[in-house]
Length: 397
Image 1 (cartoon, rainbow, N blue to C red):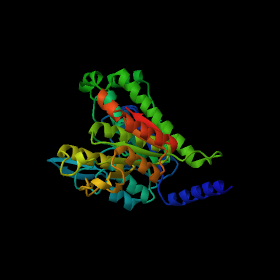
Image 2: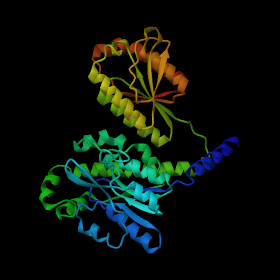
Image 3: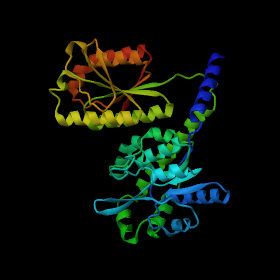
Image 4: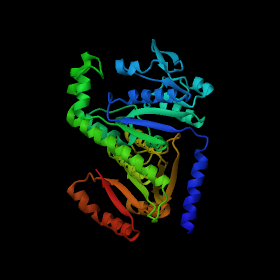
């Protein structure tokens, strides 16, 4: 009975927090050309026909005639003209929208980086400002721009996507809609010149628009939307059975690529379970501030920043009997921990107990055979201790 009362109270408090905030609808697609902008404009026309105050804040048609035809008759707020590196650029005029205060606004290309000197560095931050002012927003994003699956997208496409949106932004969405299209239909649209200029079609077919790549991106998009729907159900439908409250701990080293993968995959796990999560870096004597190479220090700081952006609490630990200068980036909020034991295994265990961790996420060991043999005793001790505390271990490759 007490649990039911607490759940009702939590839902009521969440509703109070949401009161006054604008609604957010996100269209997700597996790639350019699936019809996200087209669908947003169709929805805007339907709203206009119903007498709803809707405006176009920023729409990018990429010269697609079918999409441009839908612009006719839709009210558009003039974009902010900015000169950057000798070129005139157009940006979302966030201040004009705040003054106009429409009921709904359409904002395209969510992952866009604003021109330096803009009010916000990123367009998704502009959207957050509109939502905070009580303005409802419809926006769009391609799956490859979601932060936590950046490594997976790079594996599929061979391209490192630079413009990314943090996962917790998607968690703010009231509705997430996947614009789906078969690989065959998408390639047909490309060949017909409905996505890119005809001069770019052959290059696109040799690179991004290959059936096997499109199918994998399509699967990622479907999974992402399914996760968002499940999260929404979990939030709004009361549970009849009390499940274990998950807490994840991502354990990272100074290995840049492995740490980044662990952080992103743990972020997705925590988002799926709607749980709190932590990132732990244990500073060994060999990586004290006066010994760690500058490139490793820079990579660590970047990964700390990534973890914070994805919603983690970052913990940095070192043995209490080997205190040295902390590797602390000034602009990143870290909690510094002095552990009473000298080895990494026991440092992890101490954090597990303090933070009530249920699942530890680690990377695949990059060790030689003899290194594994020499460290097996310590590793087995850690596994036994975790088992006694009913903590799961997930190895992320």
